[in-house]
Length: 242
Image (cartoon, rainbow, N blue to C red; front, top):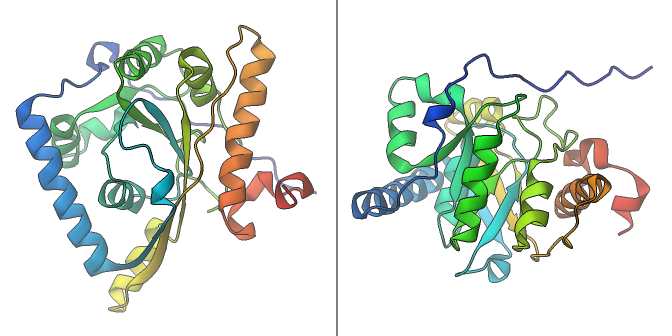
């Protein structure tokens, strides 16, 4: 008998006044450029990266970037590899971590309260997409507990349906926090991969079932970009044979 999945996390912090679309000031643009260089250096020194499918990534215009979430190195690999830096949606708890919270606030993210009716986070993400910006979200809603895809939450599909912007799937492997650090302790660089899939759109709809169907499509598209061991709850025949 299989063990039921652990429930999705619920933020204990409630600070909606902190949730806003970051302004793209000159200072923030310069900081993002500097951090991009730092991330590239970190990835090259600490891992053996393989990046595929960058020809699919839109260089201009709005896009909703969706990723699977394996660990802390995900963000470093994404910032280092993508040709354009999207605005990330990040859990509010990270803001209270010394140094990291300050860096993320300066970089500019949309803080989200997980597991709560955080309408403001959705509104700010919608505003960014409608302004022609790119927004990144991890539809699983947390770092995977199994190292493989967990059930997707519906925020990404809602944003895609509401705005009609392209959904850009980005699949990551090898970025599990513990495994990357274990390799570094042995003076080894762990292989990591980032694969960009072909963008697609979800048709406009006001139907709740459309959001559920859109979530399935997003997660199954990510699954097809991943090796079988990473597909998790989407490791069914329909995904394998698609």
